[in-house]
Amino acid sequence: MRRPAKVLTAAIALALLTAGCGSGGSDTTADGKKVLRIALWNYDQTPEFKALIDGFKAKYPDIEVRPVDILSDDYSEKVTTMLAGGDTTDVLTMKTLTDYARFGTRGQLQSVTDEAAKLDKAKYGGLDAYDMDGEYYALPYRQDFYVLYYNKSLLKDSGADLSGLTWPDYAALAKQQTRGSGGSKVYGTYQHTWRSLVQAIAAAQTGGDLLGGDYGFFKDQYAMALDLQKSGAAMPWATANSQKVTYKTMFTTDKTVMMPMGTWFAAVLLQEKAAGNFKDDWGMAPLPQLTADGKATTFGAPTAFAVNKKAKNSDAARKFLSFASGPEGAAAVAKIGITPSYTDEAIMNTYFSNQGMPSDDLTKKAMHPDTVKLEMPISEKSSDVDTILTEEHQLVMTGEKSLDAGIKEMDSRVKSEVG
Image (cartoon, rainbow, N blue to C red; front, side, top):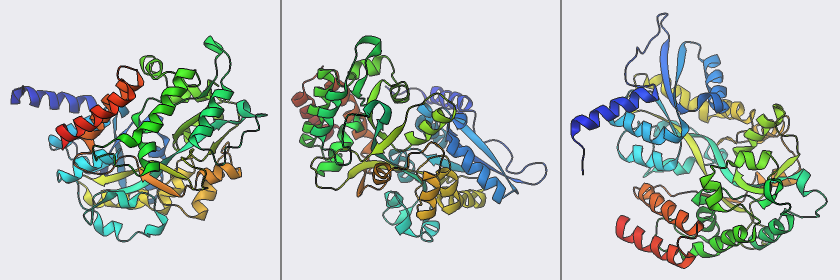
């Protein structure tokens, strides 16, 4: 049942106040600087934003940058509400491609196709993901993908070769490395609760279509994940979910030997090492594969900035996009261990020169996969399909539905509810 319009208006206003943002505020400072407002999340805990903003301010001292800070978990919903209410925040961070598809298809972003045309596409990862029928409404500044993190200290003396693992190799190693019990238990691996750690891997490596409504290609990956938790080599999904276990805690407190995770986690580990909270040696390996053919296929997604269709300072916003997505922005985020969208030899040298960053051959191999597939294809269906697949994933992983019944329900619901 729809709520009355008056109630909806009040809800939007409350959401904007909670987000600490809105369409008000001058577009210039008292001393004549242009004000550039950038919507982002968890500013104090996301150092890439500070690195980019500091670099931009140094280059453009006549522009005053003001972050519009939103809680990470609420970001997509808040920005959706802001734009529906006519907000004029200049730059919007596109946290996910699903968000980008939503805002882009609703006509809420300015075209930046002219800026995209200036870029050397051979040096960009993830740029093509923002191509909407030949138009670009955002430019990426980082490109994350999944690798296999491992604790060198816990894995030492095992003789394990992680350079070309298949999924059966990975599962066998996880079981072999599991040790202890109760509070001192060390899992062989930790697979976080996200559906992508089963579904997107399966789609990327089998060529399956996440939007197609036929999900039989999930079966082998789910069977392995369920077997790992049944054997005790991985924490049960229900435990991780109910106790709100974080992957950072699992890895940095020596609760797991291995962990498939995105490249952004490297920056977190650098911070933890610098703060003295994590003392072990660590490394990255390519994500395990279906077959040992020497090729590495993984999945991931870029992150981008876009210009609000109703931006007050469009010119300044475009300058920020150009800076953040270009070599200067790439160098700024590489210095803190973030994988930039733009890369060249100098940028990667910067990335691997970070104190605490492993620079062994296996880690460098992991950072150069052969293929990176999108975590979720861009479509008007993406958001609805994501909701269904997430709900059914939870039921399968908790055992409330059998694997066969869960996949059958995914097929049925996506076809009948999304089409």
